[in-house]
Image 1 (cartoon, rainbow, N blue to C red):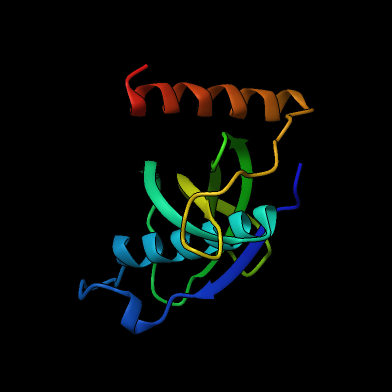
Image 2 (image 1 turned 45 degrees about the vertical axis):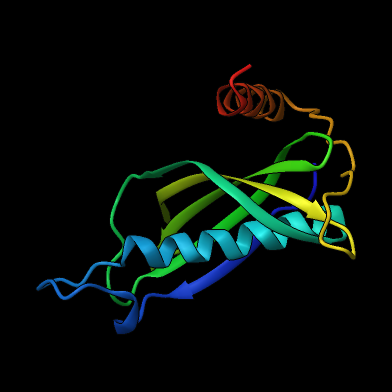
Length: 147
């Protein structure tokens, strides 16, 4: 399995809505997901990538102003020119404990120097957890393409 790509952000006022207890905008965390997912995909393919879709995006818990948000991305499936990256987002508390606030599955296509799709290295799941994620990604792909 490729290494996890990790990103850390502190939720600042410009990332929040105007509620009494300011919460992180969903669109902001989506932008961070797209960035870290693309970094993981670029590292795996050693090429430029473009986002095809966010296949599944679940908001589980809120993140608030001044929270530390840690995101971890990893490639979980590859096709011929596409790949799926799982991104988990956590609020990390000052004691180091984490609470998952978000999970997303993002599909990318690798691009050659002419911005055309190019083949990606094959991902072979090894652990039981990787095999479950791989199978679930295959099922999501079937639903996306209608096969």
